[in-house]
Length: 136
Image (cartoon, rainbow, N blue to C red):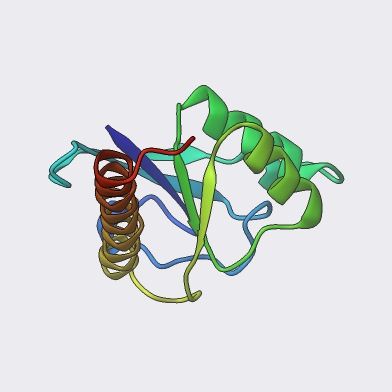
């Protein structure tokens, strides 16, 4: 399953717009998809980073870790958020601010398909090379 988090301003699910600041967004819209990219669930979660005077990014990442998010789709992450996300195995995919979550989700899916397609191709090439020319 793929769990994608989007920073948003309201609790409007796929109809909400992408907020420009990850750690200071009021909410996260989390979209859960199966391995065939079909939407299983959409939920809006409050971001405690919105209310905190400092450490907003860290608090935001912790909420997403608790929600088992695997991808963050946001315009950008602050330096601390980026490091924490990477350490937790969460991939960041940059997307423009202001677009609808539904549109952003399609951009994310297209990006993930490219990544997984390249990985599959690499595995096939590597497999072919090992079969035809074993390394010594």
